[in-house]
Image (cartoon, rainbow, N blue to C red; front, side):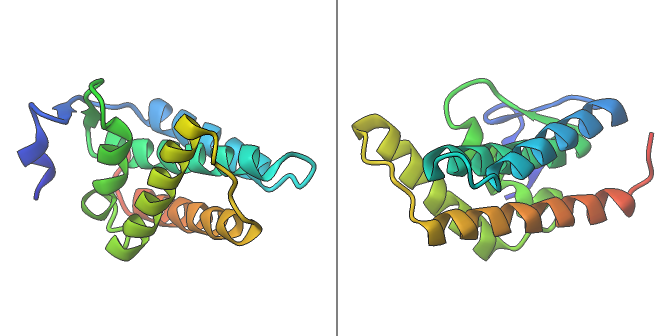
Length: 143
């Protein structure tokens, strides 16, 4: 799979500005910081960490001048393209996908109750993604 193969189905080509990418990274960093606040529930912290992952992933996609389509499955597209956009390890993407499925199923039937270990693993993965994204962006020419 290449990103270009997905154009027209799950991705659209669209230029991005440095300001847009920086704004996405800033919002993701705020969510990641909030996810570490032990004064709120694990479920809310998990949601915040997951949303941070999504925004870091979207920033990576936008930095490559693609935007996910607005049709269903855009979360999956954003996350599954991380190995192509910034070289994020595929095994980490599989882990994120497990968390995505767990969260989605639990939201529909009310069973969503992440453990402390799952939450910590998700937060650690979000921090790792943030680092990958920042390092990748630093290696790219800015427009």
